[in-house]
Length: 130
Image (cartoon, rainbow, N blue to C red; front, side, top):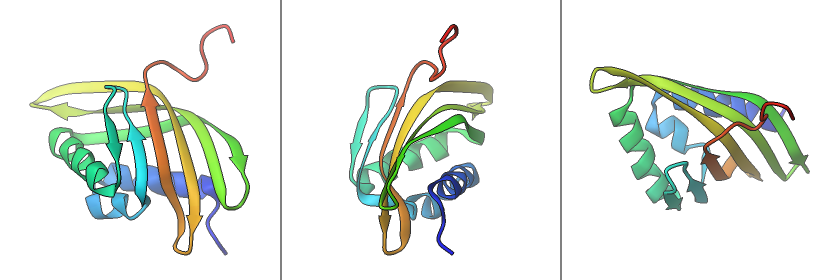
């Protein structure tokens, strides 16, 4: 039985929390584009590897989670979702944390689902009063 996009996102969060660069990158498409809340742009797996490695090296004991996962489309070949994310960890001995909203686009490959786009930005998906 093949993995659903929802199951893939659970595996992606687990890989991120493991801080295994190999496990995380195995879930990223070679031509993926990542846009981060610091306005940085990372195009292609090599660029994404550099920024993920930097984050893994910088943030110790990191915990990353997603909530309010909402699927916008799932055609069986492409799937897109939005969510709220949060993270916490230690940088230089200090407890730090952050949060925001994210968009992830997945494409099915012969090996299974892969992230082709991730966009993390400030704010919350579910704004108060909406």
